[in-house]
Length: 375
Ligand code: AHM
Ligand code: MG
Image (cartoon, rainbow, N blue to C red):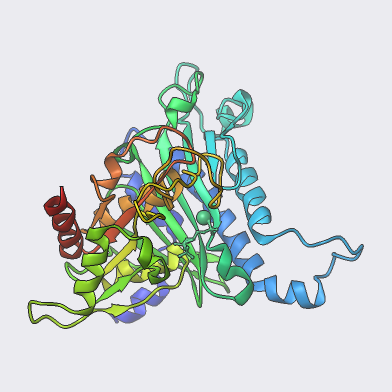
């Protein structure tokens, strides 16, 4: 009977978030509204990703005038920006695809008449405004061969939505209100935390709804898998190299770990969250004396050389490192930069990057110990 009850009593993502909201009597549903727009973006991208191969080969209906199809990442970005702005709850958007932060026009920050009627706020009350940092479609190298890709997002509350500045975005990850990702894989899975554990929802295409399939995800304390681009090994620093050596040739009698690396952060992190283990995007010292300089991505760069930056930082702080670190901690794991707890970073620029080690609590303890013994 219990199994039957599960099948007929569907916990959709909206219902779940509304339930959570019930614990905060002061809340008026602004977050639920924002989230429903994010969910819409994810559904759109899921459908576009599914059609992408076909669209390329035979073209899609409606695309008759020979215009080139928009690249999926560009299309996804447009969809998310429009969905977020039309939620009427966003003040600032930071997207991997946009060099500058998008400051939402004041009338669209939840002040318009429609909302005043719908949400019945009295004149002295203000609707909540949010900042959303996102990578609309991460894992671009995997798009054309049909391997899993994903959307990543992190959400902050804006303090004063009538005076929005970039400082509202350049906050430590510990200030984040919620974070999540959606993976477009063999199934479409949305993983979300609003600071009260982590839950996973799978898209039922026949219903068009995300259904709670992975309640209260906890990452195993130790895992059997490590995940890293070993092609960069010659540029690793000593702690990373030692760590990976130990994964392959453990000295303490424990079994060696398996290597899994997809090259889509969402897919690699999702597997890490469910199976345990560690995902590494280490600092990359690309010179014999460790001093060669690569861009720190302040220009949305992909490896463009500029002066005086020592490493090529990989994970973007705002829309990769913070959301994934938030989820890991919420699931009982850890996230570390090689120097500090990842969520305590304070980004100086919106496209700042950082090395990242995240996953099972004990596995991350090991890499922390190696860095500590180095300094
Ligand atoms: P993208 O922003 O071009 O999509 O690249 C981001 C992806 C991440 O998802 C993944 O972790 C990383 O690039 C893999 O990089 P590499 O192929 O250098 O190992
Ligand atoms: Mg990316």
